[in-house]
Image (cartoon, rainbow, N blue to C red; front, side):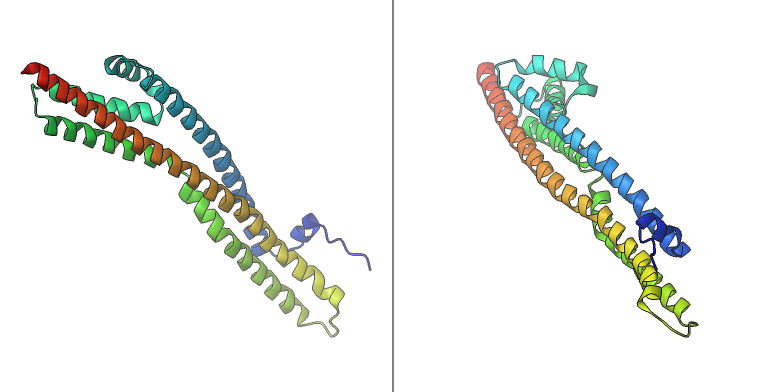
Length: 230
């Protein structure tokens, strides 16, 4: 009695509920891998753009030149450059309104940068919740398919006079495929989520540090301009 226990054969002979669960998990797995590749490419690009801007920022280029470059290149700029542009834009608007109070100038620039930082982080963290959901829910969806498949197999055996392992094995095997595919979808999503979370945390720390350093530079500029004004 040679029975075909290949995954394809088992799935073709499984109940429609198990087949539906497997199709759902395979679709989720494809979407998960797509999100993983996109996020990996996006984070690599963000890191490169931030490093390039940081190098230009500390190269001695004037703030006005950096701001002009940032505004003309807004669509291709990285998060750090856009945060810088937001702070500089608010700072210059306040200066144009003849505001010389350093506290007001710095508070406006910091609030503008903090709002831009929040927008950037929201964009960077996109898809992470999807990967977390895939990693936590997929095994349970697969387990549901397995439980349903085993129930279906045993109810089919109830009408048989003689039950042997050869008759039970195919039904249980096809049910266990759902759990295997659930784990196949979940494991990469969990690993990717943990890796991306660490990378995004590093990006957040770097952006936060830059905002503090840029605020200090603006503070010195405000102080020097107020001193020269006297």
